[in-house]
Structures are given as structure tokens and as C-alpha cells.
Length: 329
Image (cartoon, rainbow, N blue to C red; front, side):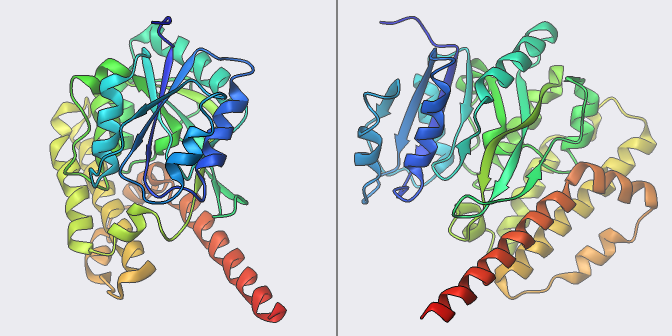
């Protein structure tokens, strides 16, 4: 067996023929400067060309492919990938996202910081892109320092999950012994970031080193149509990581709790406006009736402006493209 890579990239796939070649190609570019990685592909029983496309990269990438089987969940798929991952560090890349050139070098610099303070989680910002890859915004951590302590990280993450899946790298041992929660189809990643950050905080890799694709067919967009389940997904994680685990004064703890409630109700309201037909303004108005200090914390930690403007721009581009297609016809 060859020497263990420093990084395992776990990629869950399912009917990903449209974008997966782009995702894999973005990893291939990085091999010119850092080839000591592996890519673990876990297919969930695709019935399109996904498996054939992956196989076409066999002589271009250090691939490990698990036998396809239907699991019904990206969370279960990545858990199977982590079980065989050989790298000291791991990350996830969904089939519809991609890396930006220079990611591995940026992450390795941040890993050195994490190693020095015992952190198990490294995060960086991402570009938000349309279905066809056009940049429409950024989604960044609310910190600039290279190292963030546990208390500060938890107080921020308890308000909102501001870490994107392609923007995180973590110690493999942390997820092999305690896998992602398969019952959390929407918030499994948020649950993981909180679990990793609560002991020794996290390290930041400055910049945006991955592209997060916005499209209506993603599992999270489709699943969020069930608002009760969507809210419950947030509540489970919120209750699991109680504020008594955070080194905060009662006043700060109260602000974090209220900002977290406002964040949940904002997420639910936006999900409803995006497609369910419901309009749950009442819970949001009750959460929004709070102090300026709570609003300031919410705006800083939720990254709501970045996330919302990116989606608005993507929607405007989609409508403009649709109008052009009609004119052509």
C-alpha cells in the first residue's frame, strides 16, 4: 500500500452527470502542486452516467471508489467514505460544487495553524455561483484572525451555520469515531462544525477557495419545502449544543440565544417564500422584536446579506436568461 495521503476528499454522488466532471477536474488541477491526496467517491446508486464519468478520471486522479449502493442520504454516503479515508485530514466536496485553484496550498497553511493550537476544523470562504458557474457573490466566515478560540467560534456558530460544506477541512479521526448524524438531512454539517469547534476552536484559511453552486434541484432546497421538518432540523442542533458549554456571560448567552432564534425563523421564512407557499411571518416577527445588540450579532454571524444577495443575483440572471431564450424562440 502507498503512503497515506495528508488529505482525503470524500465525494458523495447521485445522478451527478451534469456537474461531476467539473468537480473532479477542479481537484485534478490541484495535483500539479500537491499530489499527496486521495479522492473517495461514494455513489448512492446513480442510474445516469455518473459512474462512467467518475471512471474516466481513474488515470487522472488518485481515486478510491466504493461499490454503488442506495443509501438515500448524502450523510450516510460520506460516513461510508470517512470509514475508509486514509488521510489525517478530510474534506467533503459535493458533485455540484468545485474547488478554486490554490485551495490545497491555502488549506495546508491553515492546517499548520490548527496543528499548533489543537484545532480540528479549518474553514474558508466560498464563491456562490449559478447553475452554469457564473459568480454571484461570496459566503465568508465572520472572522479575519487565523485562529479562533472555542468560545468565540461557538457563540458565532450557535447563531447560524456560516461554514459551507466545500469550505471545511477537518481531522479524519474526529468523524471516523463519531460519524455525522444521518437523521439530520439538512443540519448534519452544522452539527459537525459545532462538535469540532467546541474544544479547541478553528483555524481560518483567508479567501474563497471553493465554488458553491446555487440551483433548485439540490437536496437541501427540495427538502426545505417541509417547513416543520426544516425547523425541527435546526432546533435539534440548537438544543444539542446548549449555551452552558460556551464560556459566556449571562448577557452574551442571552444575546446568542435570541440571535439564534432570529436566525432560525429567518431561515424558515426564506425557505417558505422560496417555494412552500406558506408565509410564517408571525414567528419571525416575534423573533425580530429584539434589541439592536441582538440584531447586530445576527447580521454579523448569519451572513444573511451575503447569502441573500447571492441568491437574488442568481435569480435575476436566471430570469434574464429565460427572457433571452423566449426571444430566440
